[in-house]
Image (cartoon, rainbow, N blue to C red):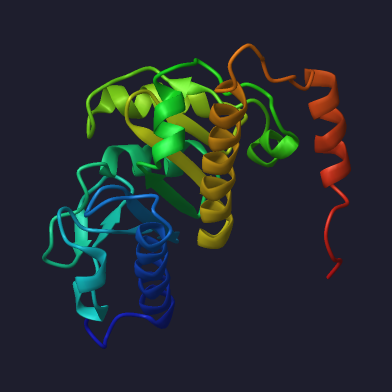
Length: 219
C-alpha cells in the first residue's frame, strides 16, 4: 500500500489481513476460500481473489467504493464482492467475514434454520437461517443472503458456508466462531443413535437476549 494512504486505511487493511489469517489458522477456511472485508467511510477494503492470506502485505490492499468500483490496489477483489457490498448497503455493518467452516457448511445442507440447541443463537440475533443456494459471486446469492440475515447478524449459505457481520472485525469474527461452534454442537448432539437433542423455546431464547443486554463489563 502506498505510504500516502490515510492512516485509518492502513490500519484497517492490516486488521483485514490479520482476520483472514486467523480464519485460516482456526480452520474456518482452506486455502484461499472465504473472504474478509471492512468499511472505512464509503470505502470497503476486501481480501483479493485467489491470493493466500500469508502472502498478503501492506502493498496488497484492495479497496472499492460501495458500487464495487476499485479505487485502491492492482489485485482483483474477491469474487464474493457482491455479497460483502450487499451487507454494507443494507445494514450498519463495518466488517464482514465469510467462511467455509466445516460444521456450519455441513448444517447448511441439512436444515433451513439451525436448531436451538444453545442460547449462543442469541449472539446472532436469534435462530440462524440458511440462505437458499445460489452460485458464488452472483447477485442471486447476495439477495438470498439478505433474506436470511433479516434481523440477524449471521446466516448460513446453503451448500457453501457462513456470513457474519459486526461493528468491528473482532465482533464479526466472534460471531463466525460462535456460529461454527453452535453448528458443531448440534451435529454432535444429533448424532447419538436413538436420541434427539432437547431444544430451547423461542421464549427461552428471548429471555437470554434480554439478559445479554447487561452482560460484560461496563465502560
